[in-house]
Length: 407
Image 1 (cartoon, rainbow, N blue to C red):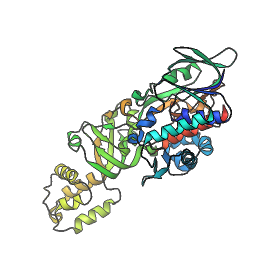
Image 2: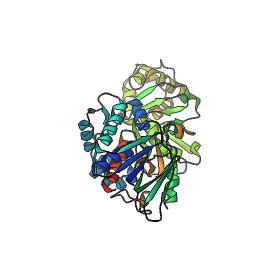
Image 3: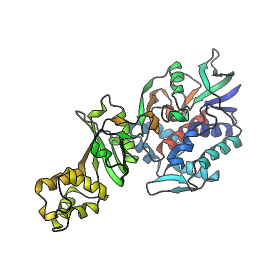
Image 4: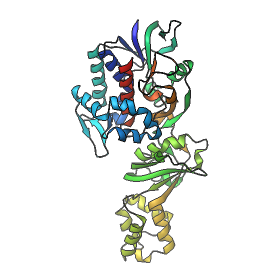
């Protein structure tokens, strides 16, 4: 009889196992992939963005209204404690200009292996290549976890089997059915942190151009949504299908949730550090300088050429020769470039899943189910999703840790 069986050997599950086993619990982790932490290994371009360099409030703010649910877990394991623990485990970290925290080695495998060392040192057992087919409560109030080979009795179960993102990692939504079976509501799921699609030919012609710092927001025809997560600032990449990079991916959850994503538009401020008045003043004062040279000081030349084409301006035109209508058109594109959208690249390219098990039915002080005593939930299976920047790993570590403290 196990004290705790954890279904899923990802970030939340591996951390929870180490925490629970260190408290003397007899812990078994079941991972259906042949190796644990597959998503960890793939994350951050195989570098693994562990967490974000900010305090508890910064993490909560990044999750919007969902952040309140995470508060108790974050107080038990804040970002600083995650970093300290990895240091203790031999993984030195660094903070990049964006606030993202990575291992100094830039090797995600070092992060995954540190979690395995922590788990093993505490005495937990990990079995990889074992797929769970059912999780059910027994008549005596205990639980049983059924695999293809055997039925395992346990006092408590922790579901850490992720959502639907990156299905190649094994996150195929198995846990939702078991949560429903236990009486839980599963909020509608949709892909988040996934690239955006655009039908516009001019967008596709910009493929490969990167912008280090833009600000963009999703606007939906006929809607007034005040969710702050509709707006994002950071890196941007134009692609053959639309756009990618931190900014488009951060706002993608709102596009993916739409029944008619073609009604959404991404409005991009290409030079967020310049006000509209400053742009106008600079163009006015430039006199006989070519408009192309002015634009090239703000944005890549290939992009400036495209904006001039859209405004029907010859790049050798001097600023003083610029007609008022053309000048206004150019400023509009610089500050409010409208990118038509048609959808997202879906779960296949999504880094996280939005939606999931309703947090109203999970005790935020313990991560235990309010519907089925002895059942705990942590990580991406919950209706909690944050932006790019290590926020989702922090949520996984913290919720897994809190569950491990209460089993």
